[in-house]
Amino acid sequence: MTTEESTPIGLPEAQDRFIGLWGEMGSAWGIPRTMAEVHALLYISGEPMNTDDVMARLRISRGNASMTLRTLCEWGIVSRVHNRGDRKEYFRAEQDVWKLFATIVRERKRREFDPLLDALRACRTMTEQPSAGGKRRIDPQSADLEAHHRRLDEMLGLVRTLDSLSERVISQGGIGFRTAAKLLAKVS
Amino acid sequence: MTTEESTPIGLPEAQDRFIGLWGEMGSAWGIPRTMAEVHALLYISGEPMNTDDVMARLRISRGNASMTLRTLCEWGIVSRVHNRGDRKEYFRAEQDVWKLFATIVRERKRREFDPLLDALRACRTMTEQPSAGGKRRIDPQSADLEAHHRRLDEMLGLVRTLDSLSERVISQGGIGFRTAAKLLAKVS
DNA sequence: GTGTCTTTTCAGAAGATTCTGAAAACATAG
DNA sequence: CTATGTTTTCAGAATCTTCTGAAAAGACAC
Image (tube, rainbow over all chains, first blue to last red):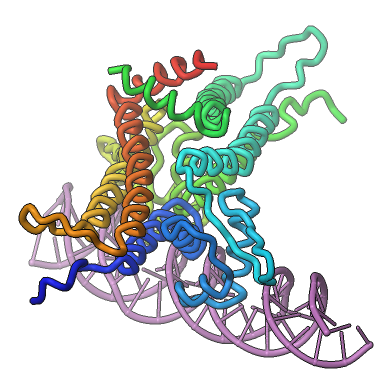
C-alpha cells in the first residue's frame, strides 16, 4: 500500500453512488429511475453536459437520454445551455437544492393535487340531493349518505391543507420553505 | 323525469369514483394502485369488510386481496377486526384522516428518508481524505472534490430538513400536523 | 384424530412501464 | 441546393411490477 494513493475511492465512484441513491429515491416516489439518475448526474457533476456525455456515463440510449432531458427541462429543474461554436446542446441542473425542491413541489401540486381537489369536489357533488324548492325531503338512506359526505369532507380537508401548504412552500422560489422549516422546528 | 328519483347518482357509484381517484393518486406516488384502492374502499365505506367483500367489490383475486390487506395492516392504516361467532377476519380503515396522514409519513420516513440519510452520509465519507497525522496534503484535485462535498452537503441539508420536518408531523399522532399547518398558514 | 372453513404463499401469467435504436426531422455551413 | 452534424420520435423489445389461482398451511369444532 503506497502513500501515493491519495484518494481511496475516486470521485467518479462517489458520483455513481450518489446517482444510484437518487435513482432509488426517485423510483420510490413515482419518478422514473433513469430520470432521477440523469438529474443526479447533472446535479452532482455540477457542470453542463451534452446528450452524448449523459449517454456514455449512464449507459443509456440516445432516445432515452433525449426524452428524459426534455422532461427534466419541462419540469424546470434542468436548463438548456448553448456554447458558442458548438452545435451541441448542453444541460445544467439547478444547483440550489431549495429551489429544486420548490420546483418539484410546484409541479406535483399542479399535476396531482389540484386535479385531485377538483375531482374530489365533483365526487362530493355527485350525491348531493337536488334540494327541490323549499321542500326538505327525509331520505331513508340519508344516514349512510351523511356519513359518506362526512368522510369525503374530512379527506377534502386534508388534501386542501396539503395543497395550500405546498402553496407556501413554493412561494418566493423556495425561500419560504427554509423559513417555514425553521419555524416548524420551534414548535415542540 | 319523475320526481321519485331522489338520488340521480347512487352511493356505490360515488364510492367507486372515490376509489378510482385514490387509486390514481396512489400510483402517482409510488403506491400500488390496488393497495390504494383497497384502502379507499375500506375508508369510504366506513365499516369493516372481510376478504371476500373486498374481492367482490374490486374484482381482484384472493391472493391479491390477502397480500394487500396484510400490507395495509403492516403500514398501520388498516386494522384487523374479529367478530364473535364469525371465523372470518374483517378489516377496518383508520377513519381519522390526520392520523392516516401521520401514519403514512411515519412509514415513508422510516423506509425511505432514514436509509437515504444514512447512505448519503456514507457517500459523503467515501471521498474524505484520511487526514494522515498532522500532515495536510494539498491534493491537485481538491477543488473538484470540495465542490463535490459542497453539493453533497447541500443535499444532505435538504434531506435532513425534510426528515426532521416529518418527525414533527408524526409526533402526537398527527395532532402536531394540524397545528403546524395552521401555524404555517400565518406566515405570508 | 377428521372435516370444514379461512388465510397465506408463490410460481408463473398478465400487464404496465421504461428503454432502445433506427429513421425522420431539424439545423447549420458552405 | 447538398453535406454534415444534432435532436426528436415512436414502434417494438426488454424489463420490471403487479396479479392470479391453485396448492399448502392454519385454525377451530367435534
